[in-house]
Length: 242
Image (tube, rainbow, N blue to C red; front, side):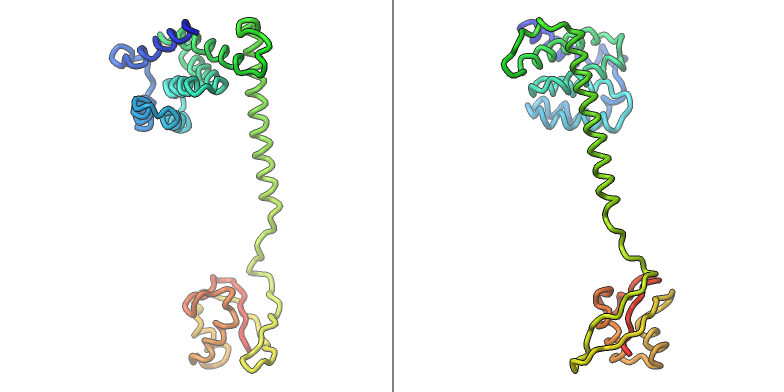
């Protein structure tokens, strides 16, 4: 572990050498979230720093340096599996960079950390071959992606099961509303057209547009209107008291 800590400290120093290694950096280091992540890390806020680096990865393709920093944050948070994933992403994007060998050492450190976290620690970290461990890690990543896809499919299925809203072309059955004297009210149906207002509808229906008629139409359609001035959208079927 002393050797792993030494490798980690070397990478920290190498990551700060902006002047000498600027040519090996990708444009993600210029991202505002990347810089914010560096500021959070300097103040010891590792989780907030990690969130910033992950934002850059989501926004940019080829964000090699952000993957490297995310791996470092996960390693500090004792979460080796995502650390290994992000370190491997860096190696994939920049296999010949000056830091690639150091990143490979960090991968080995994360692998040992993962083995030490296993219940019971059935074997020492070096007892399992590196290739076997990598295979197990890849299987875990594949299983994780499979679960994500299954969850997404399930969510889509649940959305499809939601009953569609009633279209405006469907006829609305007569409502069992009553008049002020307690008698059952009778209604006719009317489909809202372009340019309609409650006044124009009342005039076309009753031959007059006095406040009583307008109020009657509004009261019969309170489930579709919030005020006498909020006529439903074109194509909506409303009720007109007879």
